[in-house]
Image (tube, rainbow, N blue to C red):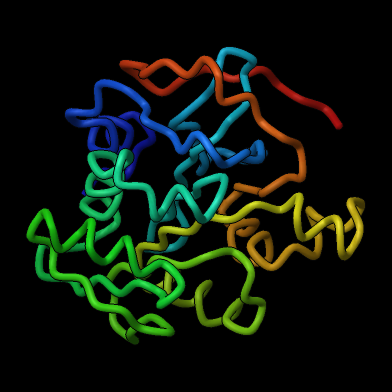
Length: 208
């Protein structure tokens, strides 16, 4: 199992030659801190749109909007993500009911995936949105024990209702992904110029 960012990036990007991102969705920039997290998709302004990380025995892939998890154009990457997140080829893949199109994408490529409201106890893969703060402790333990989490969300819509100054500390997705060094922000990201990198992209150091 790929445990270094460079090895993980190679698995995640295997066969991905272009980024077919949804045209009708505005993603948010991701903030990366710590050594466990690494960028996967970065635009020409240095904004991170997709990131990976390690936590305990488990792994994590974060997307900048839950709509990315439903988008068939990203199927090659989504399949790679599930492949990397799995601790073994037999590990179960569960998808939250709100992401039903992802089940079809995975099953269309002969990946056995089932719609479930929460992950199983054992180390498998769980795919979900970033808005449910009820499962925070459960998802953290799931990763810690070896589970793989594929999660997507847009924090700006949440910030409009709850306050833009509370995103890093209180946005439900950040309660989970923050322990791995990846944070959703409410900053809109430019999706106009995104190239496929051959190795882990370099990103500018931000101090906010």
